[in-house]
Image 1 (cartoon, rainbow, N blue to C red):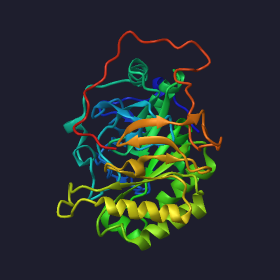
Image 2: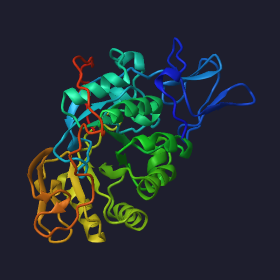
Image 3: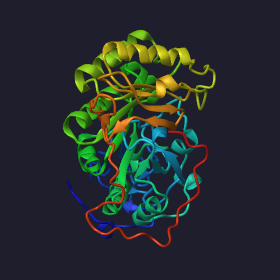
Image 4: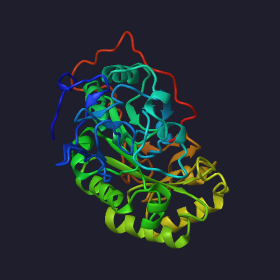
Length: 377
């Protein structure tokens, strides 16, 4: 993994010199960050809107520029097995490398940076903001953080130096080259598995399913990153029992029974305003299918459903973490074990916030921007 410090970055009037690209024979630049492999002539930007050819160099224009910050419960990402009950400092930039017709954050992901970006911040600002606000983790979210991977790495370097962990909320549409650089800096990821057919991905997101499956498999099998999955169930689009069964069969065979999955409710937005909200019964059906197949930790989201939000011990069946919406009710755990039968609950449950093996210097001042408009995970 190439490890560049902030000081080594080449800044221009447009942004910082990007990673993951090369020059083609015809003079255009090919971005190798995601499977789109955008080709850009001078002055052109890629599909994501924040990577552009500037005088023969690929520039990433979102470094240090965010669409705002918010302090969320970690359960909102959603992550139910990663530091449950803690706060997470969340931020994003602008743009996206997918084109989901159902995007719930389209005012950010479909906007140009100049329309949403707040005051500039440094990685150290963000690390200190997490400490000052009692957040043991930082989440790269709202738009897909893959596209601002250079900034992710630099922020993660700063947060790790003060004992703060890093969370990616992502669609997983990334190349092998880029993910092997970015994810060594990441502690947990919620990957949005948007459906389970190539047709759905092609028509509804203008992308492909296969690279997403490859990323998820790699994260679970070959990295220490804690992974949870989310699928937004859209009426008539990706919620059929057949598709849900194929999805859960794949999860079991390729990932195992302990990777949590969240089935969440769609609401009409962006280009799918003609569809109804997802009924709670659909989420319950999906949860039942997954549990019947053998997935141990299956959750529902975007609806009030205490049963679907509760974590149950896979050994004795006791409720070990109860939740209502994003609120923790009770936790019946001894560390990472069920208080009743001592069965280990997979995930990250330690309390080493701020511990780096060295003295943590608490900041006297930090500058962050205002929360983004109606952010959702």
